[in-house]
Amino acid sequence: ADVPVPSPAVYTAFIHGFLENNDVKSALLWFERMRGNTTTPGHPYDAMAVAPAPNYVTWSKVIQTLAERGMIAELNPLFHEMTKFREGSNMGISGPLRLLVAGANVAYLRKSSPSIEEINDIVSFLQNDVLVYGVHEIDTSYQATRGLLTSLFKVLESRGCLAQGLSIVRNYVDYEYANTIIAEENEEEPHDIDTSDNSVHYITACWKFVRQ
Image (cartoon, rainbow, N blue to C red; front, side, top):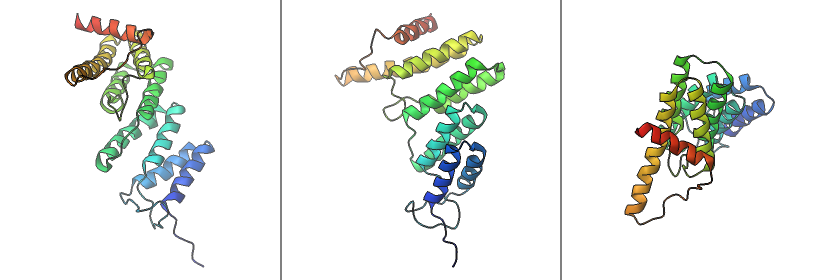
């Protein structure tokens, strides 16, 4: 009998299996096969002769694994591609996944000795691709968001990259300020910021420095 043609779910299961067994190299090879095709199946169990384009579940699993392992060289280019894939498929990227990617980069900056050029590349990547604020992106009211930004600012400051750190803070505060204005115009309550959160005070202090 002929071997049945696999379905998209089979390709995804292979990738998940490799990741669960710590074989990231094989998982990425299979994932590349899926990324090389733009065909989107009507149903996960529809048979396909070629590897289908990966869906959000597959993308997220691969990104999550790379972030948790601190594989920045593989993580950042792939997440950038995920943002491009998202634009063409109306696929959202969750706030927690974005924070996970940002956190992996913060850990890398803290533990390694990157060049100024590499630091600038990471900062540009975080600002343009990762730290996107919004209801369906990164919720700025999360304490985790403020804590991550504080950690990122501190590590950049320790690397002598104060301007880059202040730029990161500026984007966050600008978004929060715009939200406050909109809330006031609509007579809504702005974000309930926990003033006991040290990250709030630290980011506010950084912002006051920017404005001077």
